[in-house]
Length: 582
Image 1 (cartoon, rainbow, N blue to C red):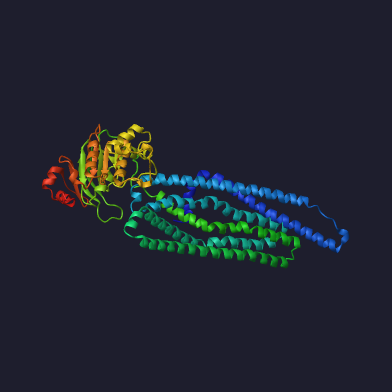
Image 2: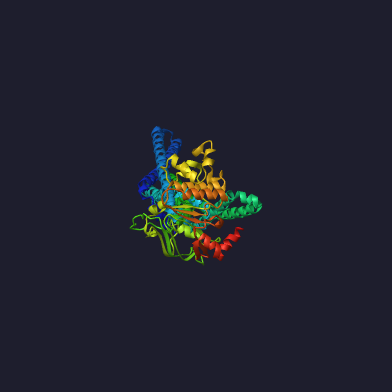
């Protein structure tokens, strides 16, 4: 993606902030013009004083000392104005930058949610976190340190050199203009090289973040399998790649800085040479030199932000890739009314994941009556979890229809659908906070009594009674203070708080021992009101004889029926039992 396209994209999402950014631009232009005036007035006063001193030494009778307080007063006034404008520029520019970053973070999350779970498939969580935090932080350079210096680097020299040409000497202004133009051109000519280096740096920084995230998340596994040395070696390799990318960017930056310094010194030499050719007066020479030196800062502003700008654009490109990715599912333009029935049906459903060569589901047709408890079983990779994700529209099928209460789920608004279909994953996530905070994620207005009731269904009532702080007990990030079974049951209770009419359990009881899993199933079955339960499981030994069971293999429905009948006559079911040692 080009830098121009990224600029348009960033501006399109922060258009209302542009007037304040315009204030920062104006303040920088006026502040730098004040800086030029400050140097010109000071040098002009010193030059005049030197000329008068020279004349007075040659002719003592011509000594007419001039008071210095008008010059000092002018310098103090200009300096105060310059300081105020500098403060205004920084305040306005950073207000725009930090407000824009807040909006971009909100936009990132708003656009990421509809893409889940597809957005996280094949991506490291730490890499996404890097985009949402560090990459967005780097975009601050674009708003706070790009437009004001870019505009000022053109406007300030144009105004100052016009004054120099009109009021002092056009030849001096002309030679200064050549060097100013060259100074402005150097950063842009080096742009493609620094842009490529910045993109490499951003990619390798993301890879390093993903590596570190994996190390932190999987620290127990690293220690258990004695992988510390291997992980350190790969970390060193990732760090070396990042360092190489940053070194490449640093070389380009150093070359630009050297050329800029050479042009600055060359402009003074050229000015002195031209002044001698045109026989400029000492006053003209000093004012010309003052203008040239005063313009070093505005023109150097381009080089100061170009490297940071390239990194900012590289970060913006990574954020753009997530924000503008088309979601796998979207709300229908004209949503259908929410159905009253909680029956679920799949009709000829097929799905192949992007980049996959084989279908995860292949022409699957199933019906789950309202209020029933059904099980979907099969070996790993058979398509069970894919089927589970289709019900709340984590994905849409390539062909076929998924129905809730006779209505195609693609015709229901996502809010209506997901308020009716509760999904409990095998590896749930908790947030760092209290137990109550986590349980209220699905229903923020739930009472303490409702939370306790949900925990009882999940067979956590005795555990809750033993907690000194009860619902206010703090839970570590990702459930680090919980056992696997406790974490799964908290996730189940959290889903039950929202009172879904369809409950999908994707191996959600897999870490429970047999007796505890039986208690949870019995309490779920005893809940009042119809609720369709679809359990994805490999624990065929825990299924009731009259439970409806569907067996998947390689994405295809190979058998279905009552568990008792399948135990007696079905080879696929017998194989699953044999795997458990039943």
